[in-house]
Length: 123
Image (cartoon, rainbow, N blue to C red; front, top):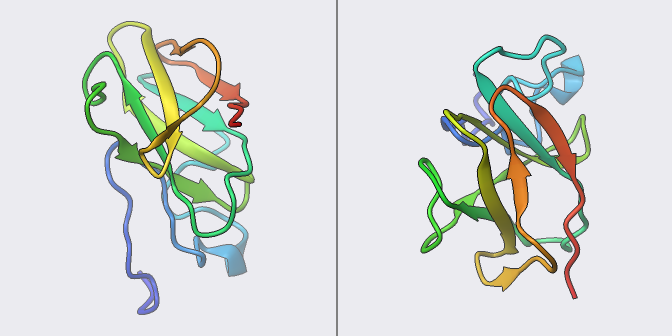
């Protein structure tokens, strides 16, 4: 890890460091791997939430819950927010700006072993 990389990946989130190996054009957290894991579900969330804001995720089963969100990280290479977790069954979830403003519409559903792109909307 480079000296300027102050954050590292957590189990359910992707790399948030701007360096994110940008110089090498690859992501150090694994969110940009071309070969998908057979056990991990990945949600790619494409939305503009404004500079300085963070996208959070809440949902119905571990590692998620409906009471407190998990901060997601932005992947510069994919131009989206990334959530990764091992799931035993499909999980309903919603995303929030700064863990305060809920996305509009119905809950999203992420299936085990799938990589799915979602486009949440905010008013």
